[in-house]
Image (cartoon, rainbow, N blue to C red; front, side):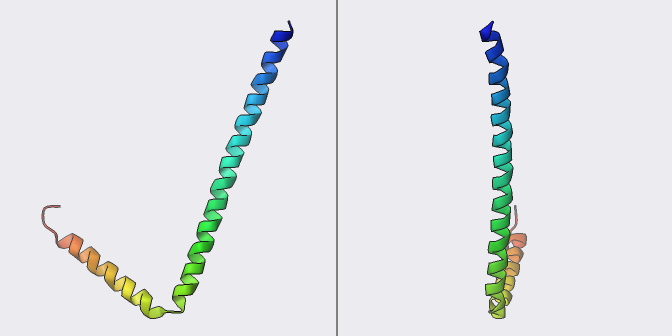
Length: 74
C-alpha cells in the first residue's frame, strides 16, 4: 500500500520538474532576446559614429544582390 502512495508523489514531482524546466527554457529565451537586442543597439550606436560605413555596407549588399540575380541557371 505504501508503494501505491509513493507513485503519485513521484508523478507530481516529475510534473513539477517539467514545469520548472519549461520555465527555465522560457527565461533563457527571453534573456537571449534581451542580450541580442542590446548587442544590436550597441552595434547601431557604434555604426552611427561612422555613417560612411553604413553607405559602404549598403552598396556592397546591393552589388552582391545584383550579382546573385544576374547569375543564370539558378
